[in-house]
Image 1: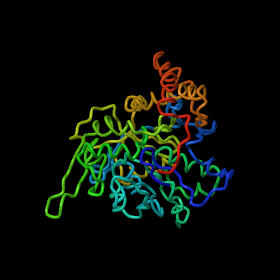
Image 2: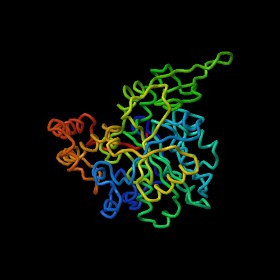
Image 3: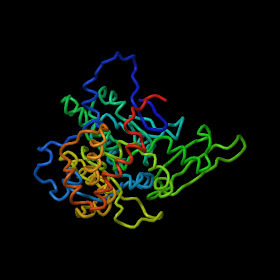
Image 4: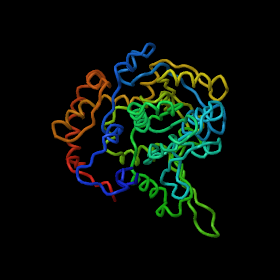
Length: 391
């Protein structure tokens, strides 16, 4: 995988490809091409009937945070993902955790790491609002001597789920999959624009970059090396400035037409409980969605063993917390209609109740905009043109 600054992570062939070569398994696994919920998955006994059409399979909804105060403080929203990973590492007889961390040499970029210690997990706390591709190192899970935990964005987890569907042996290699909620991944170009606003013109001077964490929601904080005899410089932006004003504008097109912003293919997915008013002095908390029986068992054990503090929440909390993501799902049917009319390639989705969401969760004006706005974007974003994958 390579980073295309204006677009995101893209695959690069490691050898010359002959004209007409096809790699069917790659296309079968890729969540950018297709995503599908089976009828069996959506009809499981115990699922929430009121949530499944808009949010996918959910058995239980919790709100909680890491019992370890350091993990809670450093995590973006209570450190739940890190606490779950640590529980599995220390109590679950796993080989390690495959996830994403900042690149130590180039902190504005990401790298995939395989954590086998608490210290390694702690080093990667906090959200990374920049391109990442943890699936490129699945070989480390494949070679491990015990099952592993996989953590990533909804699309990363969906790719692993697609892999287990076509290679059944992989289901035994994943002890637990954990997804974070995701509104879309900004390109590296977005991070560079954000850093410029923070006074960082040369990424070679950057020592560290945190997008969130160390408070809730936490500030974006860059540490910049100044000179041999000078103190390092720290620059900050609040969450609404970094994400709201800069980064979200740089999301790639595939993220705009994604049906899964909340990790529907994970065992457990985690996101912010924005239904409550949050100030910088608040300690982080997370919504925790239990999507499989495996996820439910792990959560219960993590709470019982003192790794997590959590309590159940009513189903209404999810929509109140993630109203924008619910709207994004609702717009998708109209967007796909527009892409089909304009003869622009689009992914194949099944099992997502897209028409139901479009019909029931949007106003008439929003329905019209979902179609006409997408037609406009086809021309503004030049979606009919093929993109080069290399820089």
